[in-house]
Length: 267
Image (cartoon, rainbow, N blue to C red; front, side, top):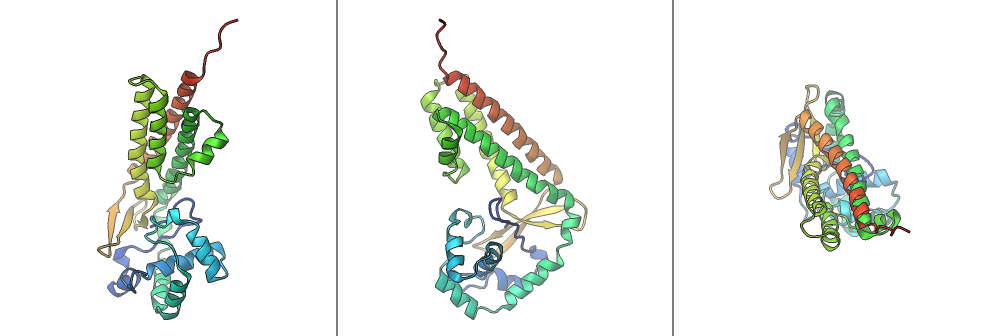
């Protein structure tokens, strides 16, 4: 699974087809209670990216970003557990993983067409979130700074959409065109969010053919990797959909602001 856009960098484990059975078992199914080898691997990578110099600093930094743990298939870090794992776990698991990743770096060249579109998906989604925040601020009747402070405190897209829907229900007449437009656009944003999440939070494996790629997800309970081929046209369609949603949300925010702004009486 890739680190999400706020996660400071990409982390792309190799695909199932390139991992020998013993190595795959060592990386993904080597259990000591519930602290699998996947967790210390993530901790080591995070320590490198964050320049952590102690286990205490690593624990504090990692646990301060709890909202990203789910997408990484991990959870809160306990310093004593990590110390025990570092002392007792075989280093071969991590050495083999590094060798496999290093051997696949040239896949970015083969999958350039797909790889170049992934950051566009992320950027367009972020732009859409800002437009949705604008709509939230208009409904809340406050300035953008205060709207951002409230809106981005809510972590999930579903909760943000529900907040917008609740304000629209409170402020706009039932059955009005604006209410229908908000309902339609929130449903479309919810569907786009599912597609965006499946692409932004998956392992990406680029094939030998130019522009070929697969999204690979780790099934935690079965301990297997599932690969789903992604056509480049699907990425282009999602980018186009997000751009249209962003423009429509912006236009809707303007229309709602005009509706809610009281008309000054003529002198």
